Amino acid sequence: MKKILIVDDDSDLLYGLNALLTNKGYTIKTLDEGSTAIPVIQEFHPDIILLDVNLPGMDGRKICRQIKHNSMTMHIPVIMISANADQKEVTEVCEADDFMGKPFSLRSLYSKIETLTA
Image (cartoon, rainbow, N blue to C red; front, top):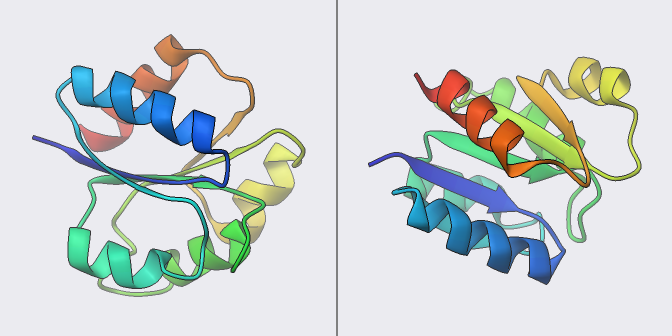
C-alpha cells in the first residue's frame, strides 16, 4: 500500500483528498502547516508528497528544497500544489517533481501519483 503525505493549510482540501485517496487504497497522513513536515517525513516514510507552496510555519518551497537536498529523502517525489504560484518558478526553485495548480482534477492527480510512484 502506497503512502501519501499531504501538507496543505486548507482543511477542506485535506479532508477531501484524505477521503478520496484512502478510498483508492492509499495510506494518507495530513498536515495543516509546514514546521513539522520534515520530522513527519522521516517517521512516516511516504512514497509521495503533495505539498502546498504557501504554508504557515514554513514555506513549501523551503520544505521541498530540504527534502531534495537530503540523501535520506531526495528520492521521494514531491508534487507542489498552489492556487497562486508560478509553476516554472516553483519547480525550478525547489526541484519539485511536478506541479498542480488549484483547482485540479482528481483524474490528473491520480495519474501524476501513479506515474511518480511506479
